[in-house]
Length: 164
Image (cartoon, rainbow, N blue to C red; front, side, top):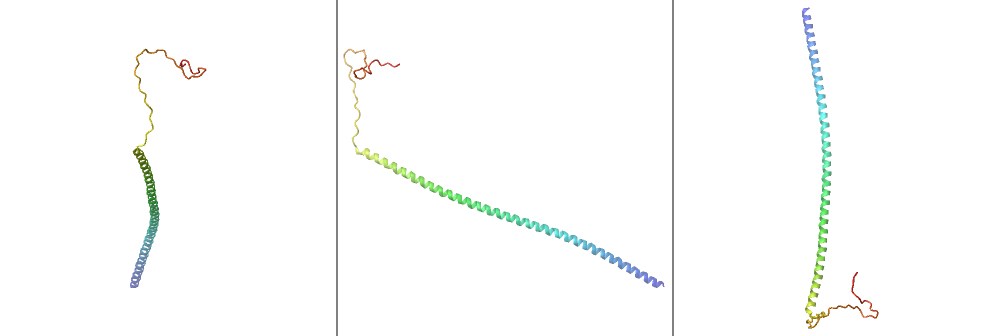
């Protein structure tokens, strides 16, 4: 019986060892499953972060594209304003040149007319005669001064020249 007991004890040990191995295997499997779930959660989190970053990058690219388009529109508008200002400057310059040409032509016309008149040698209007001084006479001078203005019958305007 002892062989049977030994065999039974050996069988019990094998069963216990097998149960311990199965328990250890189950524990390792549970640990591996937990690690796999943890890795999957980390991978899901990283995937979500990557998608968020890609979406943010897409938004930045769209904003940059809009900004680039706006800058291009602004640049085009500025070039058009510069071109319009240049054309207006040319128009104004041409108008000033026309005015200068007209002024020169009128000035030359007046100058030529004046030269023609000067070269004709026409008669000059008579000038006033210049009275010559009389030579001092040889006689006594009269010192009494009289003033008479006008020759009317009522003697208006005659009399002393006084200012009050």
